[in-house]
Length: 560
Image (tube, rainbow, N blue to C red; front, top):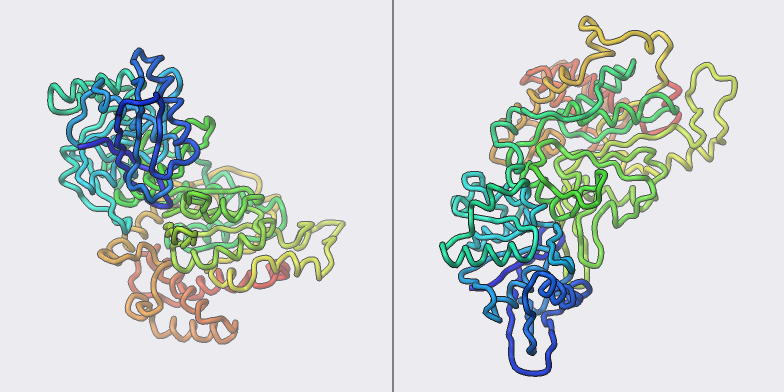
């Protein structure tokens, strides 16, 4: 028996056993087990929380060990388990059997939320631990896995599967140290944590949606609509294909063409996550910490059911984008797992950041090497890039008195930040110009399904295409057509004779690479799926080629 806790590390974490020994001697608290930073300071927070909660802190020599002792420990989530371990050793509170505890203590005894609760419960269930004490503000996050009948297990390879043992899991969300101790006495008396406190907690019923809701997409998502953007039918079609097949996309053109506006509407047409994908995405966001939408203290309170859309500023560091740190944490590419990483004004990002995306785009995972060993973070995301044609932004603008202010060398230097290797991994490229006056007028019309089509109509087609791919790739590690391996292209991408002839002619004329060859084939497969066609036709191939032929040169903007 013992008190266990959890420390996030990379895309997973470490289950820590908290042991306390009290002996006669000069009063003091020693913490062993490579405790650092916030963990060393826990002794002062715990002592104050004892006193302000009405408990007497033992006036003896206290040794607290954090096992395994050979791994560095940091983070304030160990405050509450240390406090309860001391209480158990001093016989102030009963603890029998295994119990996982997480929470940061304020001096008043109030318990603050912590990151990684969802991942902690998943890891604990895999180890056979079925009882948990978590902060009140993490109740919804804990309920995703711990509530009876809705439990899943995440193994070391990040695979998600049903976990029958989780049906017996119980958790209680507490607001202060007194409530945690009270729960321990009820647990000792009745043999289990009190279920009444779970149901009465205001946050405990916000675990999210059930599997039927996720699969059917029965939820609201507050996003702007495609119909609000005038014109840009080619760009809208490119985003539809990208959303359906998980393809990377680049759009470039003068300012004011709607590049960013449409890209930020991409979530409105994306298919909802499957139940397994939703749990995995929520787990990764739990490890990353608070969701900074307004308040920095806002933690997960429901299952993330829609693909994440991450849009970091161009001043972001390589560590912020890729992940890392002294104790490795997920970066933006991991938080965009099963979703979209949107880099607006992409040439303004540091060149080392852009070029570092090449391996994760290919491998769908990033390995961060530290002295303690490598940390592997999942990074199965689709990349969406927007850029001006040149630094001044005037290249390609129509009917302007003043043309581009950049020299050819400046334009080429601006575009070279992408690099050929990165662009070669982008299957869909689109050049756009500002919409014309006649395109800007008028509203949505059901008879006009090209320029002003609503997001809900596009999303319906995207969801149908995604379901086709889920059925096609069932039982494999492939999720979307964008991940289709080169070796499986022949079997999964059957073409008509005319389509094959047109494909080979286009490849020869454009002089594309082997990666581009398979990229066009994958995009054509997605276009055929959008039309519910098993055979790739000539029109599918030609459209895929059209979406690929631009983007190697900024001067391509002059050809549209």
